[in-house]
Length: 289
Ligand code: SIN
Ligand code: FE
Figure 1: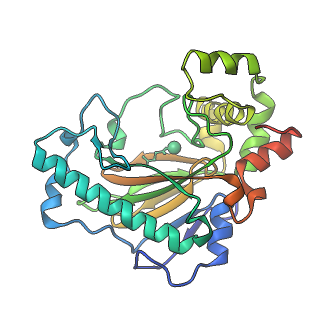
Figure 2: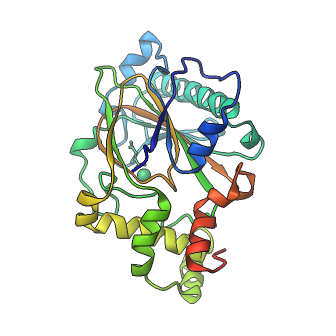
């Protein structure tokens, strides 16, 4: 398999000139990896690196666009320090993405920024929620009608532990394996799910098929072991960026990560024909949204 990782030796949160090979690679589902681009913690922020700072009832700590912090326990000073740290990461992640991908700049919609202090290895969850299995991101309650999920990750582990991912094969290959096994789409069921508020909006056939890929991959243990893949240790003090609805990924170990999600309309990509929507439409021969 052609390498799915593009390593970039940049040390600033802003690149001087956009690079077409990186853009094409990213839009083809590759991971842009910046091994020497640390998110710098202030000395007093080291105290925020402990798993108990997360409210156990909530999966991740997050900061929304209006500065509202969710999922953290602790006094006002702790909450403020968390909001400042996460907010600073958000600003740096935006600056990096805008300089790498200037065409996206005015089209991106920012999701809340998350801080994940939990150790990956000890998390227990159902197979469907288990991100230690290769998958592409697709969320049952949040249909996106083809809108892209771009994510910036930073490993801020203070003990030098890498965040270890597995990165799998290109989406077209995944889809060729799992589309034939996908359950048929039912517009009637999609209407019902929306009426019952199970989904936040109408689940299009695209959303249905993406969930079928997500579930099909995670459910199939032989695929998990035998699919083309590389193990990728993202070192402490690094950044990586990918379209997580396109890059087949699994997280195997690590602790302390910051993450920024940005949503992009398909038509604002450099090459909309590289998108999952275009790939799945072509393979099925149908308009999916
Ligand atoms: C995921 O998106 O599957 C999780 C990534 C991570 O926690 O490193
Ligand atoms: Fe994921």
